[in-house]
Image (cartoon, rainbow, N blue to C red; front, side, top):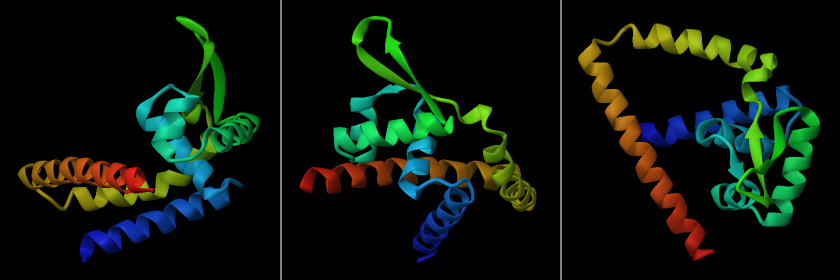
Length: 141
């Protein structure tokens, strides 16, 4: 029950950040995916987000216009375009997360190093489980 609540609050927080930045939530989720994964092709971004290639093209256009990504030709195959995140260049994004970061650091300081290692281990494994479940759900659709 706590994991579900954390998940819901994370989604709500993410929606609030996206709205504050003037972005659609799915657009901002894609920015976060790119931040985590690094530069990827449009096809890979389509696979990671579950969006159609046409939707991803429109998404990339919006994010590029807003300065969150840039397109770059693949040096090994000029037919492919790589989507490069520009997340770090967006000070307003960093500022949005500063308060959360400060509060989470304060929370983390209330735990021992051993407890934090166990929590981190759980979160890493929970991320793997969630990614597996996303793939299972996407394969059914």
